[in-house]
Length: 357
Ligand code: AMP
Ligand code: MG
Image 1: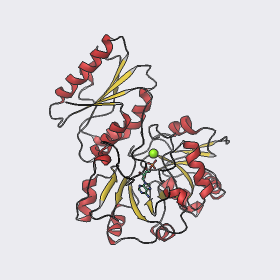
Image 2: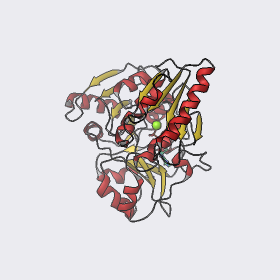
Image 3: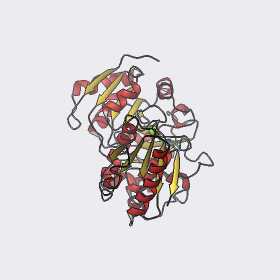
Image 4: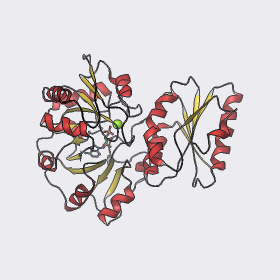
C-alpha cells in the first residue's frame, strides 16, 4: 500500500498547532498518522473507523488476532469507548492518567471489532504526551494506535525509527524526538478477579498494586516466558521486538555478582569467535569493559543502577545491533523488579536463545 508520507518535526512540549490540525484532519478523513507518546511512537487511526483501523494491520503486517489499544485525551471520552468502568479502574485512572497504564474494559458499541480483534473487551489509555493529547483532542475522536513499527520489529522510540519502517506507507509522521520511557504501557486486566497483568510496561506493577491495595497476578507470559496458552492477551504469543541478528540472552537469578553473567557471556562469545563468526555484546556501564579485546563490537545500554536509562535505550539498541554487521549478539539480562520486569519481557521476546546461569 503506497501513501505519500509527510514528515513533520515538532517541539514535544509546544507542537506547532498547524501540524496538529493537519494530522487531525488526516485522522478524521480515514488516514494514518504516526505520533509520539511518552512510551513509544504510535500508529494512529480513528478508532470508530473500521476501514482506517484495518489499514493499520495491513501496513504493519500485524497478525489480525492482535488487538489495538484505544487512546483518549479526557476521562469523559471513556463513555465513547467502554460500556462500563469498574470502581478499581477509577482508582488507577485518578492517580495514573494521563500516563503509561492501559486498562481492559468492556467494549462500547461504537468500537468496531477490528480494533479489539473480535473481543468484547477494549484496551484503553490516556497518553501523557502533549502531541498525542493535542492530536486526539483536535481529531475529536479516540485514536486506535499500536506501536508504529513493522510487526515483529523493535518498537520505535525515535522519529527515524518510524520513518525507517513506515515511510511511503502512512500519510503523516510527527517526529518529536526521543520518547521518555522507551517501553510500552503496562496493561492490566481489572475485569478478572484477582486482577491480572497482561503486559509489564513503563509503570511498575508494584506501584499499581500499592494504589489498588490488591495484588495483581503476573502470569508467565507477562514475563516473556513460554507461550500464552489461551487468548488472555492476544498478540503476546507473537514474536516481537526482534532484530534480524540472532540474539542470545544471558540471564541470572540474581545480579549481585555480575561476574557470573559476564563469565557465561564471555564463554558464548569465545565459542562463536572460534567458529569464525563476528560477535557483538550488549552490556552496561558496569560490565562493558570485561568484553574489550574479545567482542568485535560492544554496545552499552546504560547503568544497571538506572533501569529508566536502560528502558529508554532498549529498542534503539536492538535496532542498532542490525547495523553492526555481526553474525550474532550476546546480551546481559537485568533484575526482574520494577521496570526490570518490562525490560526482561522485551529481551526474552527479542532473543533467539536464552541461557540462565
Ligand atoms: P501494541 O500497541 O503494539 O503495543 O500492542 C497492544 C497490545 O495490547 C496487544 O498486543 C495486546 O496484547 C494488548 N491488548 C489490546 N487490546 C486488548 C484486549 N482487548 N484484550 C487483551 N489484550 C489487549
Ligand atoms: Mg507493538
